[in-house]
Amino acid sequence: MSSRGLSETNKLKHNLEEQLDRLVSQLSDLEECESDMDEDEFAEAKAETVDQLREFNATLSKIMSGNMTLVDELGNMQLAIQAAISNAFKTPEVIRMFAKKQPGQLRERLSELERDAKIGKLSQDALNQQKIEILFVLKKLGEDLNPSEAHFLQLHSTATMKEFEQISGDSGTSEKVLETAASQLKSM
Image 1 (cartoon, rainbow, N blue to C red):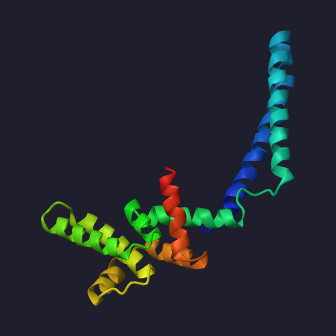
Image 2 (image 1 turned 120 degrees about the vertical axis):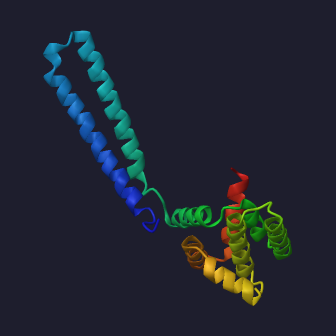
Image 3 (image 1 turned 90 degrees about the vertical axis):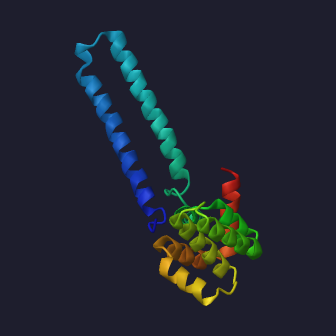
């Protein structure tokens, strides 16, 4: 994800070059095999190849009329945010509460989860995953964590959470980042 579109652009360029090579080779092969084909078959195959070359040329012209990249600077940020959110947060409900700045509801949700884990309705792994997300979001909202919560978050915070924290700090406020995430979740 750190390529910010460079690897995608290079891959596009490579694929375009391969497509052109394939079409030119196809045309060349047709010319070499003309004697082995009947006239109509050859004409049809050649016409199809020429049409593919025209389509390819039209696509290439569209790409070249702008910048030869797949993503711009804002697109880079959005890709990074989407990746971080999808990897860091497994609970869309937490993202929505964060975007709506609802620390009270987050604390309530955390209490419900802990209760469900105590009565065996929720596994410890599921509790830990959601607890990490909620505590992380509370921290990003500026809420004070008690020492045991801060310690839990420090011990269990994943690399993706840390990556998300860096991305959200680099590209704007966390609230804006998660508002974007919440709106993307609604459109899914």
